[in-house]
Every structure is written in structure tokens, then in C-alpha cells.
Image 1 (cartoon, rainbow, N blue to C red):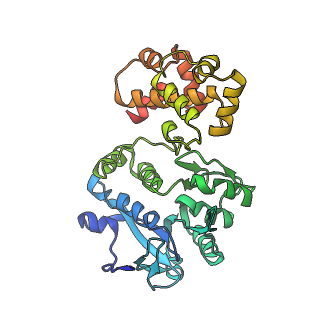
Image 2 (spheres, one colour):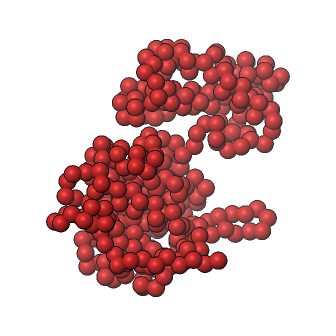
Image 3 (cartoon, helix red, strand yellow):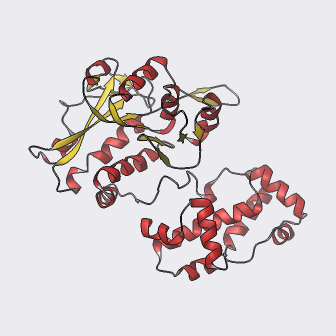
Length: 349
């Protein structure tokens, strides 16, 4: 059943948060179009609305929803939203942040395929509004709209993992990285990953504008952990793509249950009762990686958790995770997260 959200007379986020007079607002414009993902639209304002509560500065955000007309916009969830303004009206204002959400359509009866919604009219509007904005950010598959507008050419970008290959194929000039939660590029262009990552992206924008301390307090109000930087993966190692055979599932559980011990290809092959070559072929086919790479990824993830939640020394972390030495731990972190264990702990402790 279609629902209808009647909004009150629009007020700025800062005014709604604490009614302070003389507050300086950063204008955030969220683009609306038919079929847009609801959480992409409503998630970021929830983050931005808490800023005035968590800072003593007379600054905040004014969030407006812009569409082609002021008629209600039906989202992918069936919920209808009233725009605050039209694209033509908002073009007359200086925009701090242009936020572009996304949407997908599903095709096929048997093997269902999804593809991003990229409507030419929306692309044209985004391209025009971007010239008025200090920075531009996309949420989830909204990256396809930014790419179609030429705003990602020559830049590294991310999107929801399910459409990353499509983004790379449709826009060869974009350096697509499907792994990170979000990516910030020069020229103040941000791209975010899967739907709930809009909260991580929004917190990162708050941190840039008002500092890490304010962003952390906002995260606590939302009962979120401010743990996921742009470089962190959309996936947890234990939650990656499910395999199709019990044998590889048994191997994965064996690895996770024995992560602090010596794990080699011969060891795993013997456990699975296959040859070394067959084991490597199984990992490549089922998980798209090598046994060594999978083990290292699992160890780095566990090490990250220990660095965040314990006071263990690096020597203790390296030992518990099976790295053996601190040097090996550091090299793995640099290779997979482009940081060091100490820097990681300082950032996410």
C-alpha cells in the first residue's frame, strides 16, 4: 500500500535541532527522482540533523530535497516524499554539498539482473547543479549518475558491489574500486557504497566539516560505531560470497577457528583430502582468491578487531592472529589497508 509522507514547512537542520539565532548553515541539496532508494534520501539527513546538538558552534546544515517539480516523488519503497524545492529554484543558490542518491531496476524472470537507473533528465540536472556546489557526493548506485554526468572521469570511485562491474564497463574513464565503503577524490568528489554506507559517508562529511570529535558524538547518538573509514571493505571476510560446496565451507571455518596457528597450502590440502593444486583451484573457483590471500585477509580483519577493542600489544596481536612477527603484521596492514596497525588503532580505538 502506498504511503504518503506529509512534511511540515521546511526548516534548516540547525534551526530544527536547537533553534539558535544567527546560525550559519551549509546548504545540502539531495536530488530526488522517481524510484529513488528511500534510505539513500532519508539516511544522511538523520546524521546531519544531530550536528547542532553535538557542537557549540553556531553552524549547522540546511538540508533540502530538490526535484523537477513540487509533486510528490514515489520512492523504490513505495513511500512518497514531498520535495522542498525544484531544481530551477535551487540553481539560484550556492550549494555546499550536492548529494545524489541512486536506484536500481530488476530484470529477468529466471536469472534476475539488476541495473542502475540513469535517467538523462536527472543526469543533466546533476551536471548543472554540480557547477554550483562546493562538493558532490553519491550514495550507492548514485555513482552511475555522477559518471554519466562526467563528474567521475579520471577519478577513483566506488558504488554498490552489485553494479561495480557495470559502472566500469559503461565508463572506462572511471577507476572503479568496488571494495571501499566510500572514496574521496580531489575536487571534492565523494562516492559511497551500498545503501547503509550512506551513514558512513555522511559521518565522514561531518568529520570533514566539524571534526572527528563531533562526528564521533553524532555516531554515538545514532548508536553507530565510527569505525569504517573509506578504505575499509564493504565485506567482512566471514560474510563474503557464499560458496557452493560444503568442502570450501568446512575449509573456511577451519581457517577461522585456527587463525592463530600455522596455516599453509599443504596443511589445508591435507585437511580437505585434496592435492595442493586442487586446493588452490577450489579457492579460485569458489572464492575468487588464493588460499594465502584469504588467510591474510581473515588475519587482518581479526587484527583490526583486536586493535579496536583491546589493549593488546602489537606483539600479542601478531601472535594471536597468526602473523608471527610484528613486521609481518605491519606489511599485511600496509598491503591491505594502506596504513599501519598503530595508525589504525589511533584512528578507530
